[in-house]
Image (cartoon, rainbow, N blue to C red; front, side, top):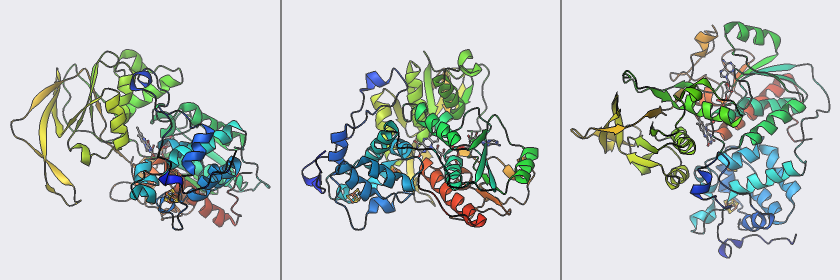
Length: 473
Ligand code: FAD
Ligand code: SF4
Ligand code: SF4
């Protein structure tokens, strides 16, 4: 491949991989973007102006060396691009797919700020690593030397898996315990396939296993198991995420039940593995033929509305109490949802349920509150009933009360119930016990969980006096 000179942003426009049409993508749970062709990836990478102070990099939670792997991609040196990219990111192909790039790397790209359209960093990162998988460059851990120390990790989400990878490459013995039957955490059972296809996650799990990580699945860690894990291992990492769904606190009515977003999404993700849950079979977690109302404006709500469309709902509406500009979910996902036929009812909030559906009240935005956001206020007398056969509550998540669940009062938590852990090491108030990911940050992002997992693993390697051997073999 001919080398591409860089700084082509004035001549070459921003281009994303082809997006499938809404009519096509509504019929399945496959990802909605095609892969870049090799020439296209090189051309898009060559738009980068190779900034001396790359804001893209400083705004990536992993501080990925983005300018270098863009240059190598533009030059057709894909294996080297992959080596650079994986040196700081355990799962680059996953971040390339599901990071909210508009708020992180791409949102801070200087050529975007000069009006030329950001470099498509996420799509190139995905392309590099998918190519690496195709060519067999992604290799399991093969530590130069086995170590005697072992680490028990509770939770097989991205935080736990990233820590496991770093520890295992340094020769540490690693066991991951998870209550689910498959590893991956929310990558497997939360995030739908149209954002992240399941085989992308499963091949990572298989590779960790091939590198010597032991998985103890279907293992719901309770007080007795926690004590056993602590006794067995030299260090323990808590990576359990946040799973307590926030509720509306509104009484349910007879014959009409609202469901929790994660129950709905998990049932749908199970189907991707060919497994029908009871809730799906009975219809409580199945949107087919129904008028569906989703309550909430975050990314979980966006995943629910788009899942309902794919399950064949008759109509899908999303109620959110603020307006479009003030919603927490990604604007890219709102646009995707609208293209697929979702109707957004901005400035609306549920007041109660009737046998017909949801009692809705209209809102307006008032004065800014303590957080600086305009607070939604009720418009008196504006109530109406939104007819619905299935109501899905996507109102966010809170941590489970781990000190009580595990009978560990010395495990300190914040006033939000998240575990108190030292910044950059994950050390908790208990000696040898660390914590990473959502259980520390509250509901956050995959890329932050990866960052925490890697940092924590390095701190544990320091504790063991082990060299950091993060790079792939
Ligand atoms: P998790 O991924 O939650 O994994 C925790 C694991 O711990 C789970 O496997 C769980 O079974 C296990 N566990 C918990 N308690 C126990 C116990 N007692 N015993 C044994 N095992 C236990 N982030 C993005 O960056 N991009 C997105 O597009 C995105 N979309 C999302 C969509 C949805 C619907 C949701 C809910 C979240 C989304 N997120 C997204 C957020 C992201 O998934 C999380 O921030 C991330 O997965 C947190 O990783 P984690 O490792 O801390 O926890
Ligand atoms: Fe951007 Fe996420 Fe990749 Fe960092 S990990 S470069 S934020 S897509
Ligand atoms: Fe390239 Fe944009 Fe990063 Fe600058 S900010 S190095 S142009 S990707």
